[in-house]
Length: 400
Image 1 (cartoon, rainbow, N blue to C red):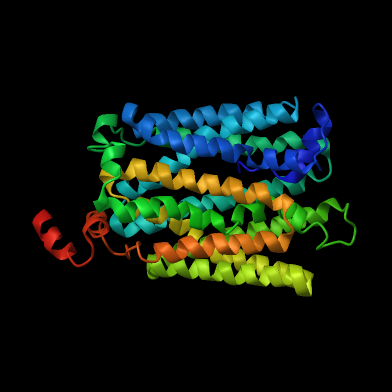
Image 2: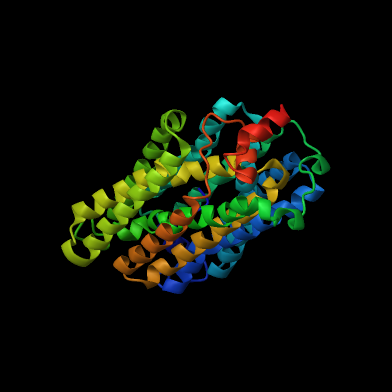
């Protein structure tokens, strides 16, 4: 729910020191502002966790995020909103970077997939709520600020929920937790995965599709380019498909191997990329646009969307997990910023050609570095990541 649609940006502009929301660089900056803060927040996690417990960091970040989100309802200027959204992104991403992996450590091995997938389910549920709020606001720009209320409530609730978690002293979270220890040859697969998980996931361009949905579908449901509800219907379609596809991932993560879902989802996304390229260059059919977008979202939300969190929780060894997650989520936010920022400046087909390349290259590389993690303990996965599958049985027998 941290994203602000272009419709809300337009309404905000009418009540603050006026700015032209149709100016590409302003729209882009406001769209990526929370992502910039998120990148900074993820970069800070490994440092924070050497000083404070996970519980303290997450609870503090939740309440700070709540306060910063409330601060955004004051219509001062686009620069003020830009700064507030950067600041809001910092604690928000701290929660995102720590939460899923921490839950994976705490829950039973058989429940890890479902628990971490539920994180993505609620992310997409938040997007649905945001779209419903847009629909409720309609064209009444006097109540635009309502869109900031639910995120404030939810971030406050997150802080309350983590109050019931067992505390974990900072010094006991990881042993030998230094960057020198992280960049060892034995962790080569972990390092590759940490850098490329986020690149592959966000390289698909998924957040550009979601954030600019109101623009992409502006003329799909109406011939009138100024029809407000045409854009909202498009955003609703994207949001609902996103959410339902992620719900489908819950039973699939229990029945299908992680690698199958991860790479299979990427393949579906790349097929959709090709369809979208054809739509924008040759056929230019609204039905093809809708179908291609749906296929893309389904592929993403049964694969790279939720499985990203699953793999971050399962494949990073505990002794270096905070460092690995810091890199993975920082790269995730970095490429999130890149794909969202360039979208308004490129013709659509060029954007999707770029997204196709950004997906294909890292996916090809990590094909060779990700083990199958389903039905394995975290210790088994750690040994396989460091020593390889062939030595796994011998080393595990020593542990036992």
